[in-house]
Amino acid sequence: MVEPIQIVVVGGGFGGMYCARRLHRRLRGGDAEVTVVTPENYMLYTPLLPEAASGLVEPRHVVVPLRRVLGSARLRVGTVTDIDLDARTCTYRRPSGDEQVLSWDRLVLAPGSVSRLVPVPGLAEHARGFKSLPEAIYLRNHVLEQLELADASDDAEERAVRLTFVVVGAGYAGVELVAELQALVVEAIRAYPGLRPSDTRWVLADVAAKVLPELGGELSGAALGVLRGRGIEVRLQTTVEEVRAGWLRFSDGEELRTCTFVWTAGVSPDPLVAKIGLATDKRGRVVVDEHLATPARADVFALGDAAAVPIHGQAGRPAPPTAQHALRQARRCGDNVAASLGRGRRRPFTFRGLGLLVNLGDHYGVGRVLGVPVSGRLGWMLTRTYHLLMLPTWGRRLRVGLDWAVAGAMPRDIVELGSLGHPGPLTAEDAGR
Image 1: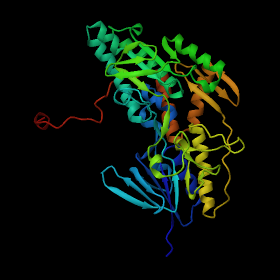
Image 2 (image 1 turned 60 degrees about the vertical axis):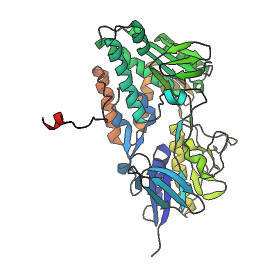
Image 3 (image 1 turned 90 degrees about the vertical axis):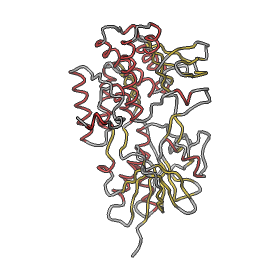
Image 4 (image 1 turned 180 degrees about the vertical axis):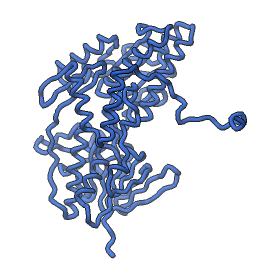
């Protein structure tokens, strides 16, 4: 009996999930098996992470259960610890702690990215990232906890520190996060008689000269005006020089006391990439050709944030690390992996972006759609419509749509559930109840 061809996909995000689904369709009824290895059994729809952090959308509704969408592909939950290119093996550690080894004939690398840290003293120890669902849930609970602690304090200085919120990184993640969290606090603070919106201080800082520079001058300026109009201090061409527990120092010398410091200033490829031994570019991404295959290994493919994928017809310019690029890379990668096994023909990655949309909360959005600038309520509506259409399943679309409808008709839930998932030990008193 002939052993089936083994295809291992590392990563279950946009790249990994959509590539595995494409392979399922292309190789259906064939003699190939697809296995996806990923730390979680879900795919996170990252564009809605800020709304999950602010409570507009239920966190469970921005994730897609992989076992329901992968078709015949197998799912292995665990963290890949080693890839041996010569032996064609992939080693991963399961949540139980033990390690398993998979053999492969074709390997697809889509492990995604992690928050990019710079050599700033204290940054790694005291900053909070914003890349994962646990981080989004933590931030929501943390911000609400600061309101509780500030309301309970009679010390004016402590109240000021707890009501100061700092976000570094004026790209999509940072801008949308600070806008959504501020909207949450403005609404939540009405339930605290001892607090006023003017007691809070919001700071958004970035080394760049503009917020959302990808949008261009006019729209970037419009977004800046909206943020500052809401009382958010936007500090451009500013870096953080030192971070310590409860305070940080900016490059202009100002020291700011705060209990909330979020770092969203860029991403780096997953550390796994550096350990494999494949060629990488100056940003640490795997070098691939326009067919998403590594030049030295025709049996290894890479895509998404972990790969420098050139766009055909654009002089080798690599695709930006966006969800819409990763999704289309995944489909093309699936086609080309199948072609390497004799199913179809391989084709280069070509893509013209549909546009860029940014949700600034409070019924305001900015962006470009097919080159046409949009802003205001129209931009906000287009942003929501796009995300609703791009969510992978109808079940998730319905759930998110209902969340938005409820949020539009009722106040946000301001319950702080910081202990959720961390129950204390069972005591004798509990046992006797």
